[in-house]
Length: 215
Image (cartoon, rainbow, N blue to C red; front, side):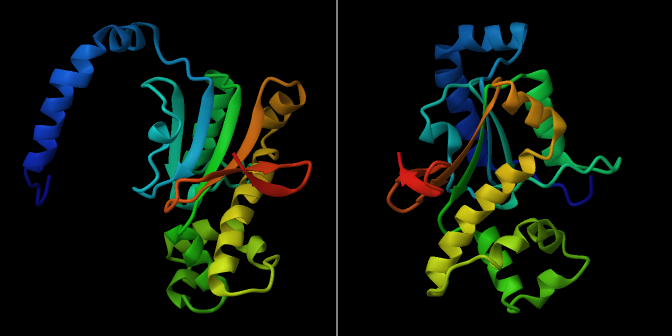
């Protein structure tokens, strides 16, 4: 490997601490997972943002959540074109192989990906308009949401786009035939959640009111 460097010492120290404490204290759980495989009931599609600690939010133990992270917690439309689709593959595995009972799209405040889409759509990020921009083309998924934003200041509109992106992803999920059939037969439920990084609050989308309400 070119330009390879040693693993940072602090990561090695943290691993050794985890191995001698958390792992040893829960060895039977890890043995069971290794022997019998994972059996999560919930899939969470969340942002890559390092401030979003999904397992911690829900107090989940190892093996409980099937988590897929990507820029701005987006799910594209169903597109079986034979090309590379990491997020779609994760959804397919969770629904068809793991048979999860709940699929959560988890967005958050101050999302850099959402801000990038906002700036791109507003004409302030020409670099993201380039066809060579992986980020820009990924954020095209939520470009339609920009057109529906309410009037207001930039901060308010960005928050609205964060929540609109969650709903776009849920709508896109329903374009997957195996997701739609699972929803229709009641074997899976789709959920939209938005977390405020600063105050720790969590909101969920209520289809009855078409609003995000506090948990």
